[in-house]
Image (cartoon, rainbow, N blue to C red):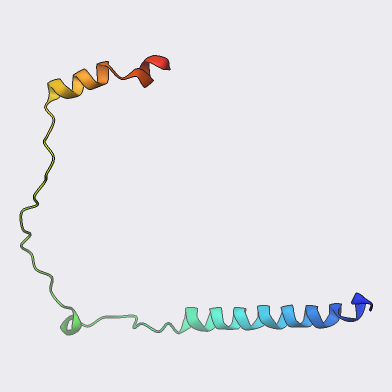
Length: 78
C-alpha cells in the first residue's frame, strides 16, 4: 500500500489544525474571557492584620554561624 497517497491528506489535516489553532489564539488574545477593567465595588478587601508567626526552630547567633563556616569542608576542598 503506497504511503504517498496519504501524504496530501495528512498535510491537509495538519494545515487545517494549524489554521484552527491560530484562529483560536487570535480570538482569545483579542477578546479575552476576563474583563479588561475591574470596578472598585467588586474588589474584596483583604485583612490588614497578620497574626504572629510561630517558629519552632531556634535562631542562630553570630558565633555559631562563624564556627559552622570555619568547619565547612566543602569550602576547604575547593
